[in-house]
Structures are given as structure tokens and as C-alpha cells.
Length: 110
Image 1 (tube, rainbow, N blue to C red):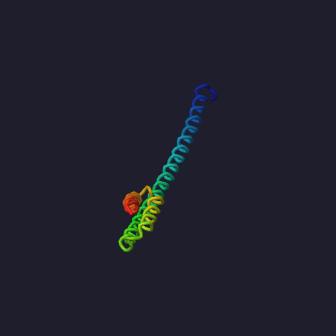
Image 2: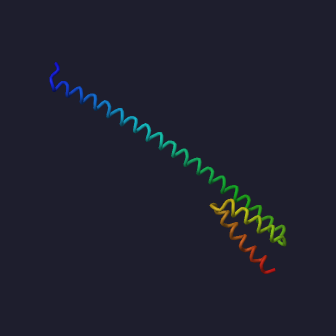
Image 3: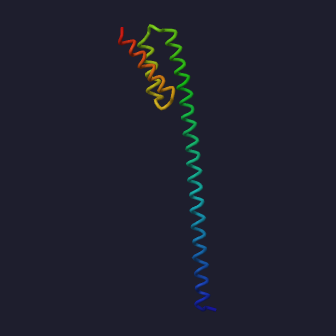
């Protein structure tokens, strides 16, 4: 029963078993990596959404301050610049930067 054909068959079974195990491990690791990437992406998106919401609130507060204290140009510019500096990647941060420029121009005209 130890003919070369039987030995070759057992070698093939062994090689195929090892190949199946390697494919399974690779799939499990790939899926784990994809799950971690998805979780990381979701977490990053939540952080960005929270930052955008906070920046929008701070921009409204700065706008309110500008309406209530139109003569305090330095204070207004400072508020807008802080928002623009800290939240520069958000739409509110870019709006704050534009507002700071506008108010800075008023300061220079004085």
C-alpha cells in the first residue's frame, strides 16, 4: 500500500490542507483589518462632525458678540481668529477666518 501513487495522494492531501488553513487565516486577518478600518473611519467622522458642530456654535457666539459690541474690534477679531485657528478644517473655521479679515480691515481704517 506504499506505492508512489498513494504517497503522492497523501502529500497532495497534506499540501491542500495547509493551503486551506493559510487561505482561512488570511481571510480572517483581512476581515479583521477591514473591520478595524471601518471603525476607525466612523470614529474619525464622528470627531469631525463634533468639531464642525462646536465650530458652528462658537461662530454664532462670535457673531453675537460682534453685534453686541461693534466697537470692540480687537475682541471681535480675536474671537474669530481663535475659531479659525482651532477649527481651520471646518466650514465655520473658514468663515471665521473671512470674518476676521473683514474686521481687521476695519481696525486698519481707524
